[in-house]
Amino acid sequence: MTEILIIKCLNDNYAYIYLNDKKEAFVVDPSEAGPVIDTLEKNDLQLKYILNTHHHFDHIGGNFELKEKYNCKIVGSKKDRDRIPGIDIEISDGDYWSFKEHTAQIIEIPGHTSGHIAFFFKSLNAVFTGDTLFSLGCGRLFEGTPTMMWNSLKKLRALPDQTKIYCGHEYTLSNGKFINSIYPSEDMRLKIESLVELNEKNLPSIPSTIADEKKMNIFLKADDISLIKNLGLQGKSPEEVFGYIRELKDNF
Ligand code: ZN
Ligand code: FE
Image (cartoon, rainbow, N blue to C red; front, top):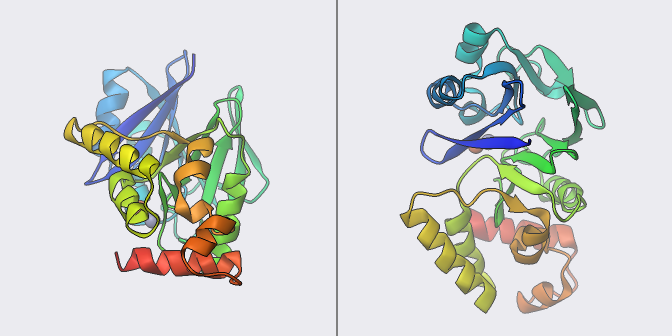
């Protein structure tokens, strides 16, 4: 059985725990240890690995405490070997990292940070995208250019349609409101209604899927002719269109 648990951390972060039927687990982006430990203990799990998508505090904040308590190993980008606390296993683009029968393909997706990576588990039908691809959005460009981020998002967009997206934050509703403000549609209006309902029940909007994001996420559509026309950006390159949308979002 495949199980990925969604753990709320800090204000709007998610950590994710994968567990197998032997009760062995890995956690992705533990921003804080407390809620992760609670879930591990409640389910009687042994934590074997921590996977970090990038070095920001709200993704690695629980590293040391969890490593000390469970003696687990920490997996992160070789490019961030000096920025990921406690890193044991350094990985790069195109590498494979395995947890028992499941193997992740490592995809470097710079833009939000220069060393950002995604973990794509084909056999789990899941990709952990950190702060690069959100549901209906993408991360801010702290350490990269629009071109870098657009290329990274295209790599994620090329994953199989049914792949479930586990991202770093619950930003979906505000992302949807942004999209609706610059490119309104009936589909987005209905999506926002359903997101408001989830929000009221305090339920996560995660996971999304690659298919849904290709349909709804404006940041994956910077090469979409009808969007470009609608924004009055005819003749601009996808990189320029992406940069324009990203800047609008920064000021939303
Ligand atoms: Zn971040
Ligand atoms: Fe973050």
